[in-house]
Length: 356
Image (cartoon, rainbow, N blue to C red; front, side):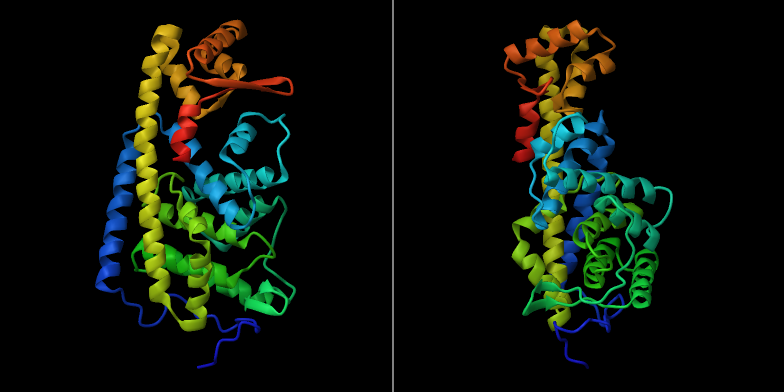
């Protein structure tokens, strides 16, 4: 066996699944728990009166955390403002995070019609970066710092293309459980490191797409990256130790714990948001009458709401829409602020749930 060297391209990267892969009883129990929790999350999503609330809000958490792992720092508030208005100035980091959102949506839309492929991964990376990308052609890519390399990924255009083709074949045809496929494939994609940039974020989008392709996740509501950013040092260490020590067991256990935490958090937030939405609709009734139901849904779909949103959704005049929203501000149900020529009405109760 050739000794692994962080300073040399890992052109001998092995294929999936790794030889001799076997779960411990503890890992098997944790895998079964994760599968049951994913099923419960999907069942809860099926019962929602308005899935758009969660399909719009919960991915924002994943996007912000996935971006933060790469030191792209933005806030949920900045992202909701960017989603609500195309005229507001946004920071370069928020702009990058919103590209992450577009890439996640692109991927989820795509896997409903076609399986994961090398072409789709390239499309996702291109969406993330805002320009057309291809696999790396030039040598010299490494992870770490000059004089202190942590990992040097494979090099050579043909080799990278083959490794990606082998990976998507594994994703689509392996008889392992889809959760294990996701865990193994996430490592493999990061180890291939196929593109000049955007590999980490593309790999974390891929996590969701694998679960979706195998019928375990119907919408991008799984906030896995929050656990990864909270445990970033261990995340990178576990990735490295697969190659340096062959420690697949440590990587699998870490990712199973991450998945359990993510599913529990998403389920908890889904329940809390449902209760908050019902409570707000009741509080709106004496203030806006029969418009309470539709307006309540809108305020959770767009927690940074504008008068134009209400006009479009409720079919009322601008003065009536303004009257409704200002009444909610006076009642303490919304806050408001002016930015440039635009006024935003903020559903703080929803944002509190997302931040919890």
